[in-house]
Length: 380
Image 1 (tube, rainbow, N blue to C red):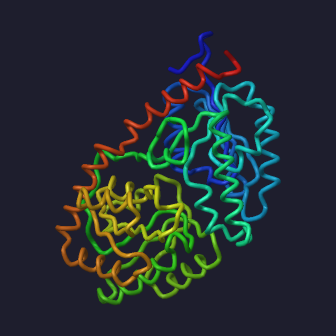
Image 2 (tube, helix red, strand yellow; image 1 turned 30 degrees about the vertical axis):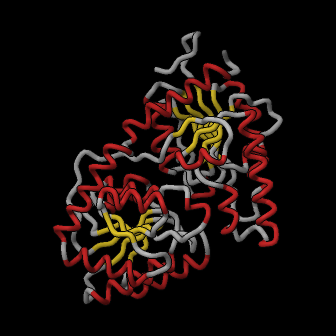
Image 3 (cartoon, rainbow, N blue to C red; image 1 turned 180 degrees about the vertical axis):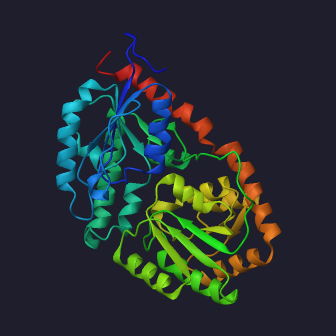
């Protein structure tokens, strides 16, 4: 159990105004690992904005509702988060922040025990943020690079990818986007493609709908696509609605992690058709790892880390960017060779179990926060 020298449980304040409260990394991996290690956790997240009730206090977890930061409507959420952190931080050993915009928003509160969990490359992500005027994207990205240097002088960081280390001058703990590997899964096969995750144009939403159309036609209507995840832009909502109306896909919207992963089990293949954008080039798409963990081959675009993983284990098919025909052809080939689909999934599962299993990553994450608490907690 994580404890202070006085014997009380260690306490973490976990904060997001951007991510869904049921985000897999935040809620189902990191918070669950802290609770399992005996920590007390206060979780600040936008429950009401996602039509979720604020959970009651249970098992060491206390939840507090915050506004959601969305599009250009972000200042109110930042102010609310600042007010809550100002009040609660002194009673916690670590403040774990998941949104880059909250790091400057919380400046000046004296939070030496604030830790930024770096999920992405914020400067690289600005090229696809339609809420920011195009003329401002480059100067804001440059300013953010400078801000990152200042942040790491004052606060410890957790990096979700080893590749992120090149952006920083100091060494920081790396907690990769490992996944929970289920003990038993059915073999891949059948005629059902699946996609799990947020839907945006940058993540290939329109491409995957076209893949579903092409694969459905080439298989005489056998192949369909299950889409699990919320649409984050109007173009993606329209594309999903059109595909559902044509009968080539079923759009399930957001689903809790356990239900989403249950839909992956036994699928023919999982789609990860992210586009060639700076924010994605140094990141491993978590969905690729999740598909393989469930024994399902991945059909992925050639982002470096995804390509290397799939090619190393021969656990799927790498297709060109923005090429729905190539992805559909890959799906049809797997449909016609179900034994090969199952073998791909099993090879991928073996590698993920060895390298990306949260059963190993969870203790490393807890150890990293315990080290921060020992050095910086205001309660010690």
